[in-house]
Length: 611
Image 1 (cartoon, rainbow, N blue to C red):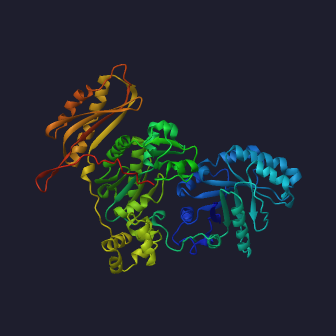
Image 2 (image 1 turned 180 degrees about the horizontal axis):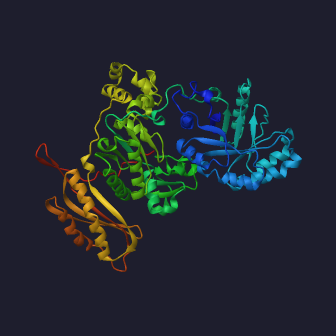
Image 3 (image 1 turned 90 degrees about the horizontal axis):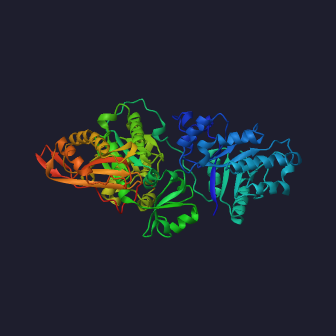
């Protein structure tokens, strides 16, 4: 079944203000707003726009696509090749490039020229659409050239020649044509007859795009309403709590890329199965890379279906112990920035940063992103807001590697146009129940009579209403079963030298002890970890009979623990060392009691939340 992309020719139109763009929105934020309404735009690009293209890639969601019109002056293969190379920043989001044939150029004089240009597009990996200006081109010679290169004719309401020469179709409808329905019916007919990968339809206004969607039998897009607040700057001082939700992007696959860098940029997936790595034929996708998601692969999908969508999918087995170790390292980095840290899952945490970040939450969150990348090699998306629930929504707003700040004065504007399903805890069934009472957006939920919500949904009704109104005040509460402290250091050179390794481990003592004091913990167990040059991981631990609170209790056992590792010539060299304290004890000063903390939560059956 063909997939339809519907959008407009361009987005930078001041005339769309009020009818599409909110009055408060600046032109620099038009694309970010537009791309969250429609999934396609046709745009002319100049060779000098490389910096703008990087911004476009960051501002638009994963599923958004561009049709790029090649400049008319790009008339030879060298210029076209240079132009296509310049599109690298948005390459993964380009459906096709459009070549415009001058109206003065006829088939006999131009067919060799067109053949070479189309070959250049294929060489650089782009599908091409050709827009002919002269009627002489509409014949079999042209169609054979197009088929040879997998290129398509640009269908339009001015030159409509419904010949399919590729596995996709592009149609542009000009403003003011009353024959749209007949053309759309013809497109649907062709899509039904041909095995098309996609059909792209562009028009000249958002209103007309919705009319096309309706003709196709697809849901119309909602754009009446205020702009999501993260796209608007705020000069007001931050008031109240600063809560951050840090979400590790595609965590399991990202961990696999850490130990196998060659996977980066490839479609790959982590599989839950009882088979061995070199014989995986059945199982379920636990998580997959963003490259795999572009093929439609998703979490919880049967492996057979995933391979049908992406035959080149690279498979790796789930390795929870390894993912836990990476997670612990990330949490150690986050802890250094947080007034309070709540680990929500293996790949997600909430940070209360009210004391540290109120002056400039955006800058503080950017520092956290940089620290996680520098120390752990992982990308994260961060949402910043006055509450946990809104911070969670904000963290999902831009992925991967996003940063969305919801200012207290802008919460209502940010939440109002979003679907209620954006609220963590409102699943499909609850969405359907809310839809039956006329509630589809968070703004509509906020405007509901809370008593009626409670009558229908019980205490959940009150909770939903509070989240929608930004009054959810749930605290960031460290979950004590998650508590353990660890730190690591990657060596400049691999080594088996026991004395050198001992020096590196001793240098980690001050850092971990300072964190113990700052968090008010005592400890019972000290552990040493060595990561070998072949990426195998070994750990040794020692537990005290009594609780410990002195630095010397850590440093005094390191040499003894290191002595339990093999460091002779037959063992792989060491590339990374780590130090960890567990069986922590929190001293409750108010109660004058010591409360024992549980060890690290067992994540064995918990899938990552970054789906």
